[in-house]
Amino acid sequence: MVKEKPNSVRTYDEDGFRRRAACLCFKDASEQEVLLVSSSRMPDRWVVPGGGVEPLEDPENAAKREILEEAGVRGELGRHLGVFENVDRKHRTLVYVFIATELLEEWEDLRSMGRKRKWFSLAEAREHLSSFKAIQVNYLDLLEHEKVT
Image (tube, rainbow, N blue to C red; front, side):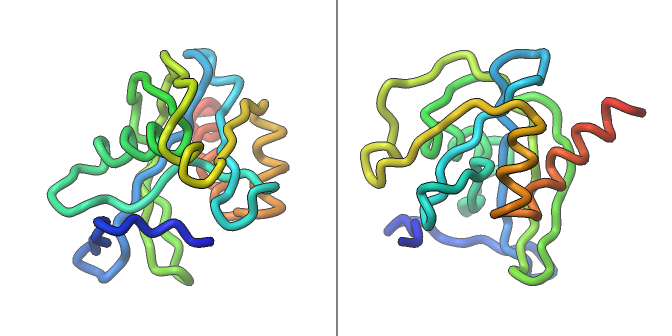
């Protein structure tokens, strides 16, 4: 089942790439535990929350909206980690750090599709993502590269 909201409109940048935003959502500022959500297509697999940027929406607000819709999390949007380009799927995703301050008991994607959320260590998240959404491992790579430099 592919999640397309009835009122959602895809937006594209000047190169024809779909505009997306995503969050690496952490339990706290130590950035040791990251939240992943179950895939809308394969509920036993885990992905980084994210999705399309709506018309007239900035990527920061899109990232906050996606983490709320997909994971039921409110919090503080932190730094911008980078832009990830998927040439095969023709989309560009702006990725942000997000620190959770509130976990809702119920949220949109839990009600509509039974989507789950779960905290993982960075190593566990890397393992889950590499076997299913390998491009999202790049998000973790940038985070780790940032800590080294």
